Image 1: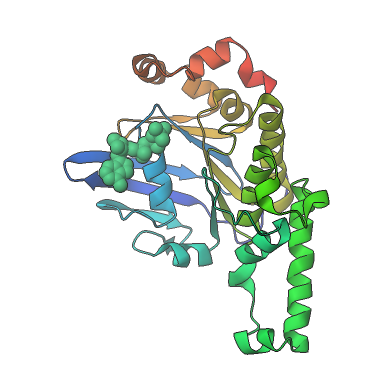
Image 2: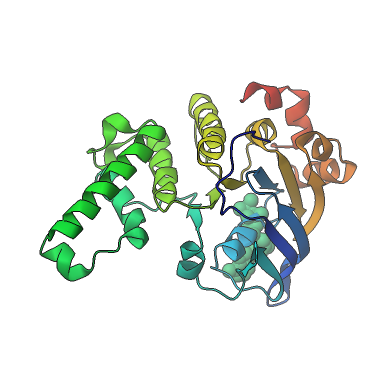
Length: 280
Ligand SMILES: Nc1ncnc2c1ncn2[C@@H]1O[C@H](COP(=O)(O)OP(=O)(O)OP(=O)(O)O)[C@@H](O)[C@H]1O
């Protein structure tokens, strides 16, 4: 865990007995775990285990059938996605949700919208208050872009950037909302080894520099085991393990779940091949 100072308003996240049913299918079955403030916490599991469903619950896209999610004292379940966003939970999507024709800065400013206070009229008339506010927000999103190593691409349309850079803009867009909790949905999916190592490093830097909590769903076991403080493992909608990377990699039920699934991203195999040590 980082020794960096936590943002003061970062709270523990508690997933308490969450069940999600789609008709007869149990996508999540009485799943509980907690995420410590300032942790990098990974949620893993074979295909169909319920990882995306869990993220959709955390961000308010899916309603739970039973159970509750709390962020400190605030109950997240039962709220709409925009209400959860307002509580400081931001999600970077696996399938990039950016406007390709707009520049990096323009995309980040869209992410910033909820923090702007100047009304439509004063912004439209470009009154001094609105101008100052826009300047302040632009300066901050440029800072965030620099942090994501996009400083020399601020005015480039996102659509012409490399895939790896587009994924970084997606993370920067989520950070532009100044979240207390960042949800990263397969941040390295489709990336090459170099892009993956850079993103792994970036995730640690985000946590350390901003003092926020990061939860990631990811199939790349080398990346997960290299950077996560804790790992929750799902299989067929059930939580089958929860612990440090070393603990879950040695857990017989986890090994069985991955071997049974034929998933080549088996955590034990990743450990045996030393990939856990390769990524920062
Ligand atoms: N909106 C939905 N309607 C019906 N079934 C769904 C819905 N969303 C998910 N499911 C089902 O819930 C189960 C869990 O799916 P989920 O997408 O959460 O798994 P996952 O662990 O993210 O899988 P993957 O690694 O393949 O993305 C699957 O059987 C899936 O088909």
